[in-house]
Length: 333
Image (cartoon, rainbow, N blue to C red; front, side):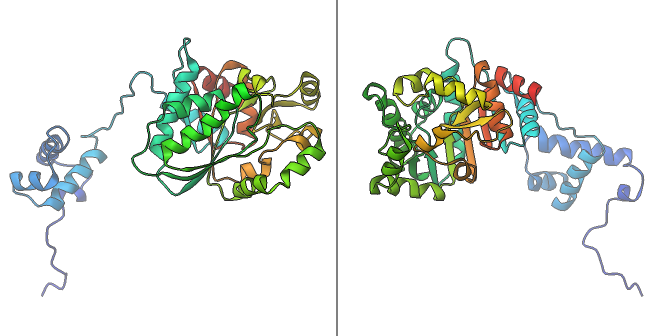
């Protein structure tokens, strides 16, 4: 008496040999073409060939194992997934997005790429913090399409946005536009980014209206920031929140190469602490780097040292940048 349990279907004969027979290869190729070229479902193939669906599944799997089916990925022009992989490996990034930025309007190309990334990855339940004075972020939020349903709960300002009235509108519009596009409530920080003295900062930080905003920073799940070079951008320069030349010299002497939210760091990403920190109304380095997902939109050759420092120091976990900057960063890693 045979004491073995009966099998619903006998195993393929070629699974017990070194390789499939000619007949099995023929069947394997036929099944593979029906599935991959004609787009037939496994159940349809099984019915047409009068075999079971599990056998079709095994034939498809074996077709890959023996090389009957080979998977190739044809990367379209303008897509740089290999460079993105190199950036992620070199700096431990969770994700890198690299785009072609033409000479005509590189800021717009970066902004468009960031907009698509945000539209794709914001899926709901997040509280998002955003910095104030960044042309790249303005380009990004301007390019975003409004979501059909809320994908962010609150958009919270990370650094003071009050400044020159002529350009303060940009900081206000940045927060308002992002909130509108994501269905979030905008939470403004009613203070300048940089005050004239530590005592003025201390007094303003104790203000209930400011405390109501700064207390939200510890609950953020996403930060959206720019990365600044030591020399301020034209937007920051016009805002009234830029660093004076004498203070830039002090920062340079201390080894600073760039900043995120007016918090400066050296080439290895270590915070550069000066008396300037006692005058900034903005999120602290520790609080910023504790936010789970930190997205930076930054590019341009003049910012390579600053971006590299931000990556080395873990200031950001996702980088959206251009091809030339990405190549320079990989070469300098």
